[in-house]
Amino acid sequence: MNISKGILLGLVSLFFIQAIPLAEEESVGIEFFQGTWEEALQTAEKGNKMIFLDAYTTWCGPCKLLKRNVFPNERVGKFYNKNFINVKVDMEKGIGRKLSSRYRVTVYPTLLFIDGEGNMIKKAVGYHPAQQLIELGRSVISQKS
Image: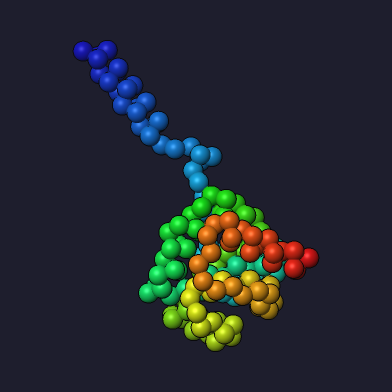
């Protein structure tokens, strides 16, 4: 009886171990900064990186497509996480209203590239598929260099 319980416990453990994906196997999309806008600016300046700002609204269809289909993409995540401080802001709430006015955001989604001092480097509007978003980021980096 004890041998049967041991075998059963071993099989159950093996099942759960295989069900847990390894960290290296998980695809990681864009990791968005969790602090305030001011903290994002400071982090960008200290790290000598630009901010990638996803200016969105909750009702915007193309914004939802970016969130669901593009931002979780592993290639997009690797590129943007390496090269930018990524921030997403609802333009109809809180700091979003101020940023919307400052950067003249009138269309959603608007994708902004901003330096650590708050200067806008580039603005793009609308939905961008994964490869196009990577190319957009590359063009901003080469423009800044």
